[in-house]
Amino acid sequence: MSTELHSDSDAPVEITLRRRRRWLIPAIATAVVVVAAAVAFGLKGSSSPTVAGSHFGTDLQVAYEADSNSELAFLQYLNADIAPKYGLKITPVGIGDGNQLDLATANGQFAANIYQHQYWLAEVLAKTHWKLTAVHPVFQWAYSMYSQKYPSINALPQGATIALLNDPANTAQALWLLNRAGKITFKPGTVPWYATTANIASNPENYHFLFIDYGDGPRVLPEVDAVIAYNMQFIGAGTNQKYKIYAPPAPRSFAGQLVVSTTYLHDPQIVKLIKVFLDPRVQAYLRTTTNPQLKDQLTPVSTS
Image (cartoon, rainbow, N blue to C red; front, side, top):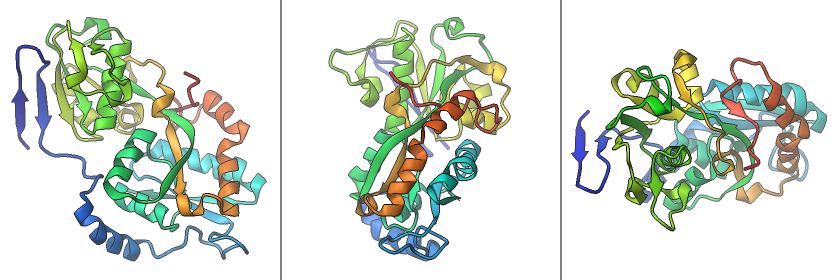
């Protein structure tokens, strides 16, 4: 792993780690992934016989990011407490490769997935042109600043090095967090959820930004002044929550989406599945749960 340092008189310092998250693929590799996914997921979105008039059965497979215990716990709650009301069973399937996860959803091999916000999905669709639809936001991933060296965001020193996730959507989310905290400003006309360091108008604290792979926040936390990333990654790694130093509400723009195949959007079993996720009990549960796999990790969809 190597680093590259970029600096000029008007811009913050950026340190880019070469090893990148490999969930977005070039279009030329799509055919290879299609074949691999077809072999790996020889199924039809259900482990039960199909229902008449539907591509799916009553047992619907919903994919989530394999490393996310919180997403798994959320699906387990839906299966136990909500899905039976609609005559469904939800079987969670953890997938570590986002390309296969989305492709298998587009092909109807999974009924749905829940691992992405709308901007990440937009990046996927721009590169692959797969037929996927974000139906509705279903939860927020709590997104915070952590530090082992400083007790609050206001205690960060001049020139602090802050680690951000290196994909465009999550970089934007982190910069918007700093902007909303009053620590940086954006150039006029900047759309916050597409912001890059090039959109920074002022950086009075002279923050340096280190770009890291998804999931690497807990690992690099001792080496930097602060990290901005998903709470679930730190909780999953056993990071002491006293190191969470700034935790504003997540903007609705970055809510986790229920994503289904556009081809099967109006399939009667998918219509039922959507009702499960939008059942009013779901948001109330996220607001009050004490489940340690969910609390402070997945929260109700923001109204702002």
